[in-house]
Amino acid sequence: EKLDVDKIFIAIPSANSDSVKKIVEYCKETKAELKILPKMDHLLSSNVEISLLRNLNIEDLLGREQVQLDTDPLNEMLNNKIVMVTGAGGSIGSELCIQIAKFSPRMIVLVDYCELFMYELEMKFKAAYPEVSFFPKILDVRNKEKVEAAFSEFKPQIVFHAAAYKHVPMMEYNPSEAIETNVLGTKIVAEASLHHKVKKFVMISSDKAVNPTNVMGASKRIAEMVVTDLSQQSEQTQFISVRFGNVLGSNGSVVPLFRKQIEERKDITVTHPDIIRYFMSIPEACQLVLQAGSMGKGGEIFVLDMGEPVKIVDLAREMIKLAGLVIDRDIKIIYSGLRPGEKLFEELFSNKEDYEFTHHGKIRKAQFRPLLDSFHSNLNRILSLESASPDSVVYMIKELVPEFTHFRLAQESHQQI
Image (cartoon, one colour):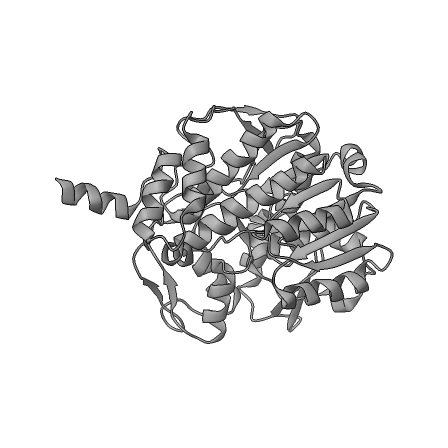
């Protein structure tokens, strides 16, 4: 007040989220505008200029300490290799491509079905990594013949499979699509990796695959099983799954939704006052996916340490405050009720899974679970279902994933009683 400060710059790029949060709390006592410098890893990859100062966002308050990577195995896995990334235009896929580019691959094959996402990623790559060779391949992973042709053309040595449907309510409306993309698409890309003697195949999974209560989560669990099954058939290709929770700011997640509601001065909708979720930043998730991929020998399901879970209502409150608004006066928080298949909290391991620690502090490994004898026959049945009703798909999922619980199954049990 004495100096009449109207702008405050937080220029401590090494500060962790707890430190930033304390600084922000002190600064809120003033009316000054707050700006912050990006994290250290961003500064190291660019020139430090005043233009790098930006407004605070929720990621600054929820972020964790920078991931410590063991770069030697990453270099061995990626340097001078042909790497294919499916779902390359999505939040995780595009960041994976950016992280991979830092290890000087021979080529990155960017695979996605959405031409707009691919165009945006191509422009980003040309600007940031002009020295890296890449090819944007418009491809539907559900088309077996075209996937096989792409593998024959590019001969990838490493494959990261991030192509998937992940929106829980949307997949409740369209369960057949979830199976076709998340299960069949995974099977097609993984089998192509086996046939073409790819060295490593790494599938991106989800914490929603654990004790699933919705179609999306169950489809990811079946995809994990497909990858595990192929690992038992392969002597050359290492098949690996990596499971983690929500990432901050990904397409379709709550952070962009809340941000849009705040910008439009609309009430923020939270499904339940007690709902909690794990969160990590997109760069952190992708760095750990790469690290887990480099560690895998085949057959593992790696699980990323997601830190402490966050109450979604607390997330909403922090975002309202960061926008300089007052809860209940400027914007209200409204509870809309849990959606079908939505849990109050997510789990990282099944109640039938034990886990073990790895040499990396943020990566654990789920212990191997044998597949049911009926796995192959039930998998073939569900993949052969055409124009099946949602109920039929849900019942078939239950045959493959015994721990699957779903409101349609509960309704059927109630009717039988």
